[in-house]
Length: 338
Image (cartoon, rainbow, N blue to C red; front, side, top):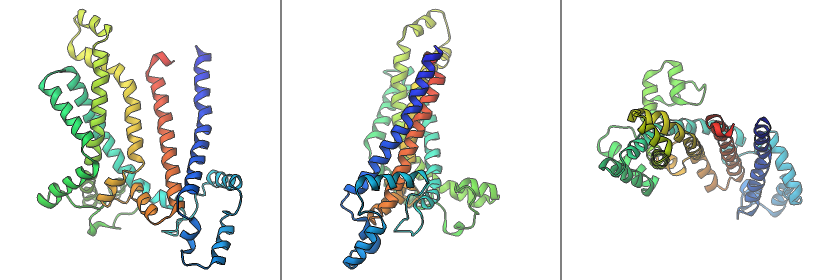
């Protein structure tokens, strides 16, 4: 038993550098196959030929691909993701400045999506075939069918333009901009730490719409998966045995069925969270949210390949890290893997 567990752990640990190497290889070749010349992005498309050639040599792009890849790996290992043409800052500095906004948005969205999605999924499964089940299924279908940008535009039209209940695009109102000292990069937390409660509630108000759109899209998937997992558990023989023993409905649902359902749900929620952390491009663009998704979009439109590849690499690292964490939690929660 111990030998099997150690073997599984060793296999998981060994897969990490292989995955990261593959990720670096993919991002490297993306930068080489896209029809954008990184040299021209630096010096401009009207630069003389000798300037272009000199810049190509300085960037090491005249070297064979294996040499370029070796330098690329070395830069990654030292935390050097290059310099952004668009901002003139190091890409790592830009990412650390833009990522907290995405983290704040994604974290609120996944918390709301997980709580409501699990609740709706369990409710639908325990009332299979009823009008409640049908309503939840229609709700989930709408969440999957409606494009995110449509939901975002409808939200702005209704709650900002028509009703005036919530503020418009942006992360903060004009009167509060640059009024809160940046400590963590999380605007709500920084405002709370500073004791600036008007700025805190303004930041919360700006969070509601983009987080709500992402939460609606995510909870539809989580609710659908929860319902499917719960239905499979409720049809199991151990549930039939528990009913025959006279256990209460709530104990059967939450103590037995949901306990087994929670194990695969961990993976679903973590991977959904990873998808939100990569930067919800359309949502951040529509709501003018200064996060990683908007940074990626603007960088791509400006042919800033250092920024695009650096941000893509960070997104991949987030996926790998959260996938590994989900796998570890899966092993801890499921006694069959011990």
